[in-house]
Amino acid sequence: MCQNPHPNSIRLPISKQTLSRHLLEPLTDIMGTFWKLKAGARKADSMTVEQMKQFMAHFESSCSDLELSGADMLKFFQCIAEQATETPSIAPPSKPSKWLSILVVDDDERVREFHCKILQSLDCSVSLASNGYEALGMLCKSYDAILMDIQMPGMDGIETAMKIRQHGFDPSTTPIIAITANPLEEVRGKCQASLFNECMQKPMDISQLQKTLEALTTR
Image (cartoon, rainbow, N blue to C red; front, side, top):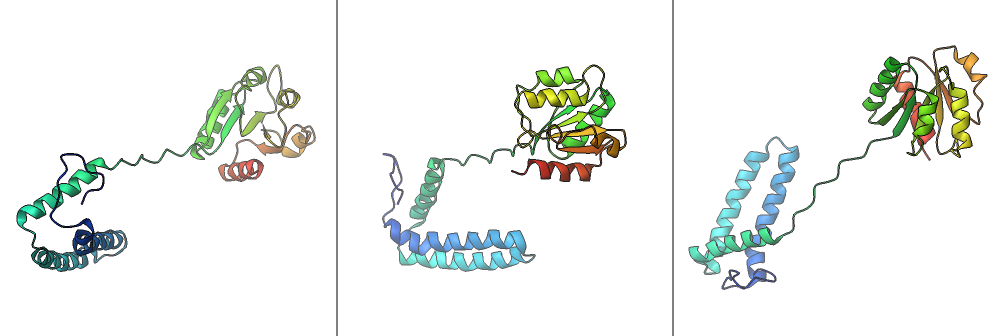
């Protein structure tokens, strides 16, 4: 009955085809029905119990017709257990990766943490930089998008974005979103399209941010 048996495998006095037709196939049908019902029907238990009773009656009749003794049936179930131990286990599905990898550049620690929480709630992987110099040093890693504060001491957001583009990070592959507490109309006039893909107001609305990231990262 068992395919490719080991030297000590248990054997039955009937063919695999006969046993499958009379016992395994009906049992498989019953168990398949059980799980389908269990997943979607309130009456699954009572319906399955009735079907199982029918199968057991069929089981007893088949054992009699095939002239299988109790010892033979014990061998049957031992053989099933033997096959189960030989079946390679299926690896669990891998954990889904994060939606996007985002670099947040802002000199205000509270703002960085706020943006970090928003992005993590969107299932993004987040890296933080406190100024433009630090952001440039982190470009060894690729990001799906960069959130860039415009007003920062030393190297502001516009200069930082310009250097990022000069390093070969194209707007089509590495979108930069300008974030500002100033009126958007005022900032948009300073933010060249060749540097920034979009401009957003602080504090950012999570729904608007999600839509913006979806639009900029869908390629």
